[in-house]
Length: 137
Image (cartoon, rainbow, N blue to C red):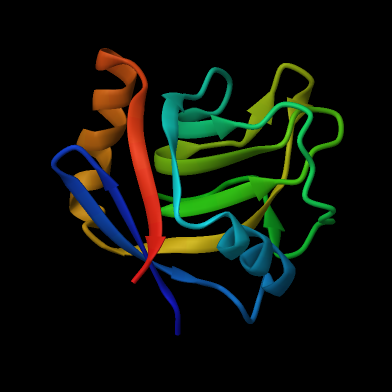
């Protein structure tokens, strides 16, 4: 099982890739690693943080797609009626955009540091965007 390390400031999380459920999404994500970017707070989805990618596309379709990620689940929306994006739930979340409810490919779940995730999400909410790095362990 491949693990991803997610770090932002003093926060560190370990996550597992779901290669069995979302193999194409996992491979596309791995090609982006190591990745340093910024999390910003969602506008429509509740307790979540996201990484927008605008018009960029990775050539993916839906696989293992869901609309209601639970704390620690990360989705990749491949683009369509809204922009391509990643969303990570830190609490109650219903994945949506200005166009309505969306579904994204659930490809990664945080397995270590989950107890810190709500505090990190609130940091993004109240203090603004936070730099984050993703890398394979």
